Image (tube, rainbow, N blue to C red):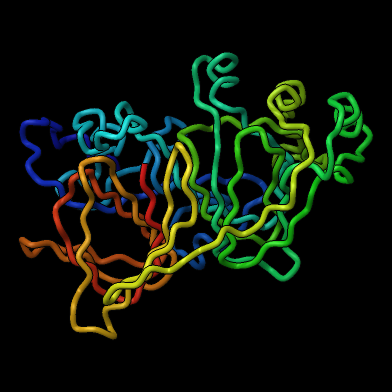
Amino acid sequence: MINKNIPLNPNQIVERKPFLLKPVGKDYLWGGNRLNDELTKDIDLIPLAETWECSVHPDGLSIIGSGIFQGKLLAQLLREHPDYLGTHPETSDTLPILIKFIDAKEDLSIQVHPNDVYAKKNEKGQLGKTEMWYVLDAEKDTYLIYGLYYDIDKEVLRNSIFDGTIEKYLQKVKVKKDDVYYIEAGTIHAIGAGALIVEIQENSNLTYRLYDYGRTDKRGEKRELHIDKALDAANLKGSSEPVQPMRVLKYCPGRASELLCRCKYFEVYRMLVNTECCRKMVDYKTDSESFHVLLCIDGCGVILMDDGDYICFFKGDCIFFPADSDRVRLHGNIKFLDVRG
């Protein structure tokens, strides 16, 4: 329940502690049960296709789950206290990212997201959507669709949608656990059945469906396609098969990290913490330039603060650190995605 009784007076905000976020669920028809079963989301939706873990988008607003602002909307807190976002130009107005878990029990639709220029011109000033996927788990034959095998004419692709032959033009890539994919706006793409994914993206909910396999929703109706806009926004050039980025772990006592993705919208690191094998806990804080979001993708642990306060967290939990945060100590055997604006 959202707590509307705690006032948000910026003059009263003196601490810069991290806090847990509570997600919003989505019951799209292709979803499964893994987000509840494996990540203990406890959201009463069947299927549970997505959880929006860190979001200020009006289609799914995250709620603060711990600390003095528990029960408040993250969007409201950041409007009242924008310095939590940091001084980086991309984070000066609003939270620029949206973080999701995605459980694809069935194939997602073939889709395209527009870039910022197209979106602002055609969608009342909304943002486009560039995104990154981190594969938490994948069944043996799971694949994703990433672009086209070769250049194609717009009308040829349009006709293939109507005659059901579009799949022969789509590049299929087998995926496995721990893979990383950068999906630039305009790329024709889809997540295949059997994938459990973390998606980090621009703060947008613009999706143009090209093809949906003729499926019907729970009312027996076919889902809307957006063929004209999708073809206008899509990159119709052939794509090379995506190659996994070179990843170099950097070690220090109790901690290791590696860069997964860096683009104009976000930076994503994978961070491994294991203080069970050393006597020293891991110090962690943010600088003044940007907020950080830690998404726990395995293990569990505790965040200890200098005043004795603490946060216990588990696999699937999402923790927001304001820019120029208080110094904390991390303890446990944990894997995080560390997302920065």
